[in-house]
Length: 310
Image 1: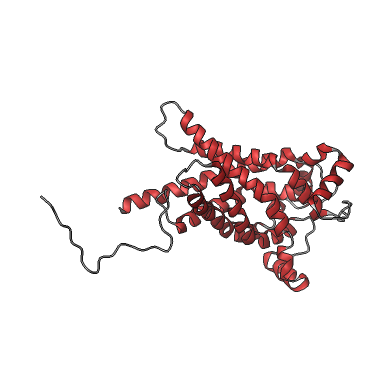
Image 2 (image 1 turned 30 degrees about the horizontal axis):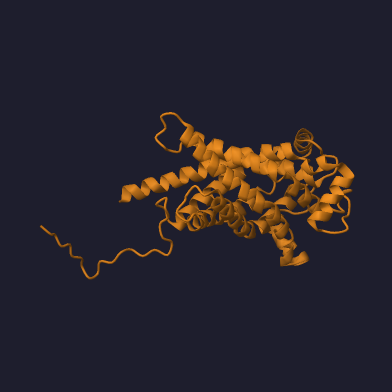
């Protein structure tokens, strides 16, 4: 017996601008999940970010302990959070772009293989190029507010004075330098995260294939710390370029990476290219763990809501 199912002429399949991905979520849901993850990550790690900025920008602050003691003594605990408003405004939109572009590109580049590490790496690069464009202006404001004896009254005052005194180009003065460092960092980060997550799932005896909080935290921390360690030389180059001629830092004859690397090796030896790798890894491990666990938890929530609606 054949049953014919008819539809009303007005009954049409739902058309979405952002079609569901292989995870059952739409593009906008990845954006919201990424926005939540980025905001939580940066708010939680902001005091450490302040310490890192002070260490990199000021001469004489060589350790986390010294920088922390200096801030607490002269500014109190509130000094660790100066500029957090700028990051609050920038982190959400930037990470919404970051994770949604990553998921979109991963789906397009995987070519039927969701475990393709090359696709993960390329998708990560695309994600960081797009998200850095959204975050860089607020990152400039944030770092200026984080500096000791910052002359700005707040986020609005800082943004207004930069625009009036230096022009809109000042908000993007470090964009390509940031991309140059973050692209390989993100490529390594995403590839390591997906590989560790897959390994943990496959290597767990009696595992049902699910992804728990421990998997996300462990994979995120491993990805953040290893990617940070691998890209430390580029971070050193970026810092030397940004700080040249300031607070006793050497003025560089050329801004090319090759020239900076030669300068560092000549002055400090090859080990100079790995300066700051420990605090860099200590920063990125918990930050990545927080971001990925929050992101995956947000995705799971959306998936549950999607299933309930169906």
